[in-house]
Image (cartoon, rainbow, N blue to C red):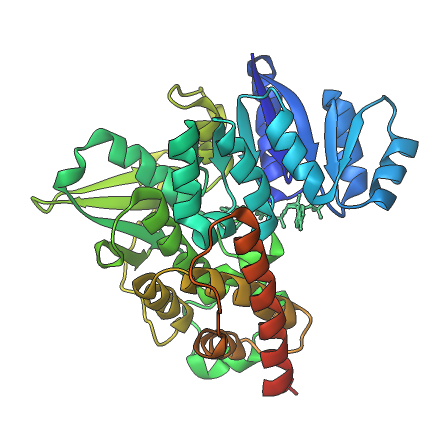
Length: 389
Ligand code: NDP
Ligand code: MG
């Protein structure tokens, strides 16, 4: 039985992981969970598994949990709490399902302890990729990707010698507006954008999937995880979300990874690797698949993807700036302060105008501080550019 900590257990990935683990109770002991606003859910999860350590955002949340929990648990608070759980837990595996840059804290400290990080979060690796890779290398930690495309690539790359791999090809469903007339993008509301055709996910990543910013982030993620240059990464539209990635070999062969579009499958892989579990609901019946289609991305329709390739070429800290700016811009869209077509424009403006003053980030706080600066700067840009009518 292995010890497991889930950071962000109350979110979409965290909930999928816990529901998967009901099938594999004998494989894991859950030693820690974290949540932020959804305290009732955290309480139920904690009581179900009698989890000894919990992290919440502030003292008020900790007090509520202490007063309402039916057993005695150690309750840790805020950034210090995230650090302490990652640093001090005896767990072997840390599933990082927190959204946003805060995930950088547990990722860093778990890697520094030489642990396995099952990484769903994208923001940390995009913003501080080389820092995390160096930490893993220095302390013997490992990152196993959970994002479905990267789990697919990880599995495909294990089968082949790297020198024969020419291109990594990530698939994108294209989101709900793939076939809309671009002129109608102005009519896109948060409610419409929150309906993803194939995946059920948290709000931020669902909006990013509608703009294809999510795919852009996945390009940046692939560059950091697998150390391929941007010119060796491609994206192809595949609305059925059955093929998660391809690798193109030097002889022109394409190797593909196919699975149901269910995050429990890559979560299970990251937790069980190098073994595999039997997952009954995961089978694909090839004869029942009506069609698998592929088409080129229309970059005019999805300028966010172009921005990602641009920042990949420019290198650090531009990926961090894009990622942080997107956090602010997407929340402005969700709050109906800006329109859908304004999203890429505001991102581009932030990338062009944000001035960073340091030479190079060296410690964890440098990345977190820079991220904060970009958030504040983007807020100003949003204010200055005017709110949509
Ligand atoms: P959700 O928004 O559903 O969940 C986020 C989780 O993180 C919740 O537990 C939330 O707590 C917690 N959280 C959010 N902000 C903070 C913070 N500042 N400090 C501490 N905890 C925080 O997101 P998803 O599960 O959809 O995504 C999680 C990560 O995985 C993201 O980085 C996303 O890009 C990535 N990912 C998600 C996929 C998916 O299918 N959902 C697929 C591939 C990658 P609470 O809910 O209690 O407020
Ligand atoms: Mg993905």
